[in-house]
Length: 160
Image (cartoon, rainbow, N blue to C red; front, side):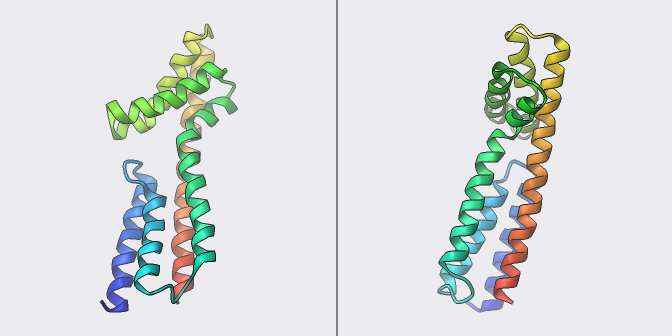
């Protein structure tokens, strides 16, 4: 396999990963990391090595964790009780299972709202927690897009 073809193939996978940072149905950052791994394996690590892979592996793991907790963290930042935070977290999981793509956004928002109401908070407090869950989701998405772009840029820098 020619190196040019491999670079094109890996860049296509990275573009799909970048789309995945915006369309949460795809695991964006892990796909970009997978592209690093594929390229490294097929080139016998000629352009980058273990240090590069460890750093980006840690970043990838951190972002996967942050992605799951972003709505809950946003709800907490906007004053949600522990019931609202747990509601956002559980709502995020259930939202993905039952509503697919839409559930990724709606799950934490509705979960935070339900958690706050179930804990006896007012509708206004529940709405504020829901707003926080949405802000958390959006902030997490922005972080993923920026990180994806930096990952792709570092790959290009390494192979250049």
